Length: 567
Ligand SMILES: Cc1cc2nc3c(=O)[nH]c(=O)nc-3n(C[C@H](O)[C@H](O)[C@H](O)COP(=O)(O)OP(=O)(O)OC[C@H]3O[C@@H](n4cnc5c(N)ncnc54)[C@H](O)[C@@H]3O)c2cc1C
Image: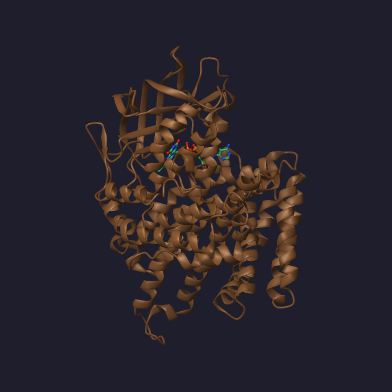
């Protein structure tokens, strides 16, 4: 069973679920007509199906390795990279003046999701470059932009992001890498970074690292961090890769999955770098890249969910066990339940992801604060729910395969291994949930309530045709409102944090119900309505337990002493 990019699904989502017509109606994205979007998605889907998907298994079986300090990539990955670059998929949302396509992030998200489903290990490379392109576009000097953006956008050079150090993971502010001014406008960057995705490769002319480090007068914590662009080869006077910079890949990590993606330990020894953004303003600049990557990582979860669903369905249709009308296990009630859960959550997570991307586009196109706040609010939900869905759907997909799921040759196990890290990197899902209940609710829950108003408005509109589904969504939303009020009322943030993960999941569940209801309205009597009924009746009720959990506060979570935990 080979991967097929779900192009027609995106077309439905853009038209009926996420309000893409609003994006296409802006001056900035006026070119994004239905025909153009369909052509782009079709072309990208073809590249994913024909070029990237065949690389997924070879990448798993032949991991990237280090040879004389250079990363050797998995067989076929260099050709895959070239196809991505030549198709223009690196610079989809990048500015046109530097060679990008200037497309809406909604379309980029759909394409990134397809690439993830086709071959996640390779997709990480364009994702890193895209994030770097956006960070440089927003924060770098004109000179840096002119030199680096065209080469990153064309795929001649690649980009990475370097935050993590052995003692500084979630707590980025604990980093100890240093940068000292050289007196000529450049800086000498020294330190060790770990887990650097695509920290090197053997197919690009240069590898450009965005590195967080502290200037001599940088205060401790995140406020004293600056961002530097540190290329593997220093560009010569003509902008071509020249002298090797003082940096190296020390080793590659041996990982549970994503074997085709080299995860590097990097050493910088007084490497020459250029400041990006203001001195001590590194986190603001890096956040541009991280927000982009968070949405991208949410899309990785959705992409793997799509691939896992396709594989599980194909197996369920073909495998015969017991007496069923078709002879296939697909007719067993429990197998059908699994497939329905996979499909229903796939839809919900994709809708949330695209709705978040749509809000980013509206914010970019209109500059309206409301759109920006909406995008910021939806980002942690899109990241955490997208990746949790990827992990859960891949796991159910393995179960559908029975014993064969545990055998590597089916590929069902690879999905589980590859997707598992998505809830960890780009800010763990716990950190995403804390962001949602703290920073994203500094407005006293205003944005959350605005979203809930929209959910209830739609439920009211759906009452005449879909009374039961509408009532269930409306009620769930009311419960979410009560829980939100409770959370916002907790001055002690620990009370919010203890229930942040179940709260985020409940929010996603309710949003999922909202989008499923929308799909039911667009497809009365059709399969989408049936799927919506399944989700709303059987999966939405999960919100009850989650919200109860979310409102229990810190006390019970800390009830056992450390000795009691260990006993
Ligand atoms: C395959 C892979 C690729 C990666 N790629 C990159 C990359 O390209 N660039 C890069 O810079 N980094 C990268 N990372 C690093 C990744 O972003 C970190 O692993 C992640 O941020 C978590 O940090 P940590 O591993 O140190 O875990 P820790 O921070 O030690 O967290 C351990 C646990 O404690 C929890 N925790 C930590 N702090 C808090 C808190 N304040 N409140 C509540 N819970 C908390 C976490 O949620 C987690 O469950 C990659 C990691 C992997 C595995």
